[in-house]
Image (cartoon, rainbow, N blue to C red):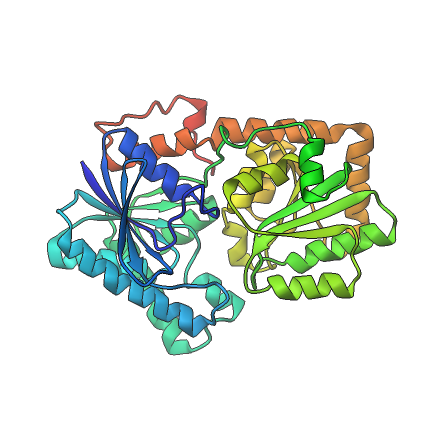
Length: 405
């Protein structure tokens, strides 16, 4: 079997960032599936690399999160056009496996189905155009109408769809009767695992041996990192023995640094986003992970990588919105809700967890949840079954195979 996997932002562990596609593609290769990955990089030439058996085609399509909306859209369309040209040159696959965002990757599937009768499976990581519409990035009524029609058409023409959360799946079911499988994001329980704080690592990063809350990931318009700074401000004003860490990149990073400087936050440190190893080292010396988004309905459906890394590492969770991730935290006793209007109450709750040592139960529960439901091998098994049920049967009686719903 041969699959062309299309992901504009494909990353490896060395690159850092979201590496779901790396694991899924590697899992397919290990199962005997031939995988051609089509992605992009910021260099000015086409490149081909063999990574863990995956043939990765890098197209010369520059992209930066710091760009404005119009420039990003141009990059999305440019990638779609270059990818179509490459698909024509590659040997015919059994499927295209296309992951969004951006939604424009779905245009490749529509084109391939019409031009070559190639079936495609469409994976939805974030709801488009709902997300940019709710954020206010897309306001033109004609453009909104076009994008909603395009979204519906992509879903309807896909052979199968994959959703990363129950909320995404429920939204998609309103627009299509195409079969939808929920394959949440991946917790790499082999790479991330509970670890004792190391004085060597604390010294390396200039941190103290005290209760540490980390935010790791994008620092953009929708990430509400300012709420993390507000929590740090209240902790400092009350002389709480906490320290706060931000490991991130994005369009709002400099604004957050300026705000931290304005607030004179001595209990907060910024670190440049780096490799997966750097994420692991900073998680190792943290006790709790902060998961945040702006308070928009569509963002409650997100399946953020930082959450899955954190629970694999056995960290308690502090989350600022009542989406499906919060429900997981509540039902499995792994985290707290951060109410941005009463940060003092949140600090008191954290102190109670520390004093009663209940924090250790939260951390243990987090690791157990990661292993039982979100281990990468579970996601790979689900995907293999999706692309070839006869060749890759699934034991649905296994608790690990129960879909999160």
